Image 1 (tube, rainbow, N blue to C red):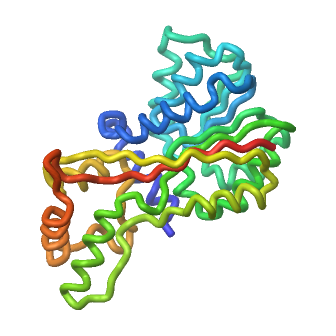
Image 2 (image 1 turned 45 degrees about the vertical axis):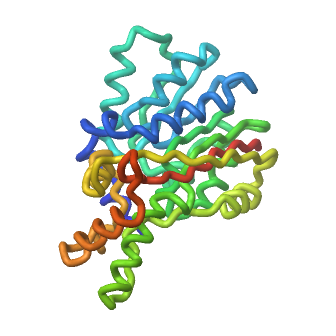
Length: 273
């Protein structure tokens, strides 16, 4: 289980490069925004894991009924970047109550005011939760009656090419396999978490995005540039004894005419209190 301090440090280090490399995360945010834009109105929103503010700015630009908006993130440098961009922007009306909170949502939600928001949304963040069931229960309490929760996260097939390449490399070298990829919950697991937390009208849209890179190393570097490394602090991406044969296997097994593929499985959930 990734250490939250390590996660915070990673994202802080990459705050300046995140927007350039967060291609999939931006596509996910656009899809999330489209999924509910015309379905219901809201006035008091909480965004969890706002990062550098891509979704935040779009929400403020397309939601004139907003009275209150709270943007929360674990990485203070990313949060500062978001606040600065919004305060300086002339593209939208800033809600009367706009606040930026640097906190771990799993701790913050425990004591947040009950029924204080009618919309909670999060993009590409919930995969980092240590205790998704408990956290969703806290978020259910924070929501107003009939309020909505919307979030997108990654599924277990994300980076399956990389996972297979590492597994094959360990097997070929006669070594015990170690996991270098963050574990992602299944669609059914998230559905159960939501039901157990008390949510209803649960809907999910599952889809995939594949990006292509010139080399396997380019793919690994792109992940590092957004702070979301695929490895745990303990294992790292591996020393050269494992890394080089892994990259060769990846190239031999998965390279296509477009380049080296990296698959992202994505779940977009909507639920109501």
